[in-house]
Image 1 (cartoon, rainbow, N blue to C red):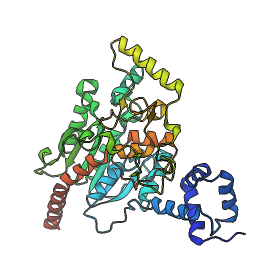
Image 2: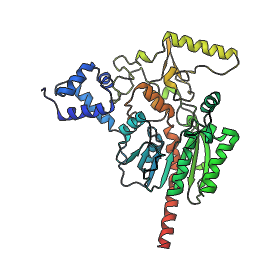
Image 3: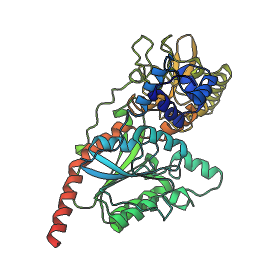
Length: 419
């Protein structure tokens, strides 16, 4: 048995709970046989890779753990994805006490960044789950039944959508059930802009009527473009509600000028790109100061995208790839980005365009570089494409916080008066 440091041994086990052997081998720049041998024999204390392995685990635990016992309010995180909305509300002083996310790959990323020191459930529709009392309900509920792309696909297949959808379209009613049973002091819901116009506006009317009249919440809604915070045109509807009357106004919501450009999030080839321990060399080759060639489009794919774009341009359609440079603002990153990257392609001098790397996608969504990406590129693209622009919701949390506190105070005084 080879000598090993306790830290590296335990860190090897931890790393392999998040990464496959191949992913870990790629990160440490060793062959997979080395990982297999270390699994059996331990990591040699004099191995050059041992410090990198230890740094990797430090990266895993660099995110928030949710263990803030001096929190200003508690919240539950429904349809949580990778925790974008949670990240924003924790920064405002909230503490998560329940998470619901069914996708196992998203669970992996969520756990790597937030830990799991509270109830973590998969299917929110399972009636056996106990929902703890909470101050704020957060939910980026599934948007496929309401999105333009989702509606077009379901129409082409002659399948129902919106509130007629037998699965996803009814998930809003799980939110309704919890709001009715628990009556938290406030909530925030997020969805695609098209929620307002779906089914001639009927879907949105049903949602607003449910929240305002059936449940009795004071409700405010607004479409916000993520381009105020990151270089991406991404419009999403934000719906906030309070259990008591408040003075909340969208005028309190600070929207910076849309001055962000892709240069803010793209990898830098001038030697200033930071080394991120949890990334290793997966997304950027620091020895050569360049993005790995695997992100450059193949000749066949690039030719196909150009022909596809030319065909639709002749037909008068706007379909086609979106080419960006450092001065650009990108189109909306979608969950299908892993397929061909066509909506956001980075121009390269004397070379075919390339996809964004997962780290660049994380930055485009407003996640810090400390955010760990423990999944494959395909899963990472899906996760960031389904996520939220974190700074949008950080601003929402900031604007909501004093009103959440006021409602909590009002309710506390009311309980005291009837005690």
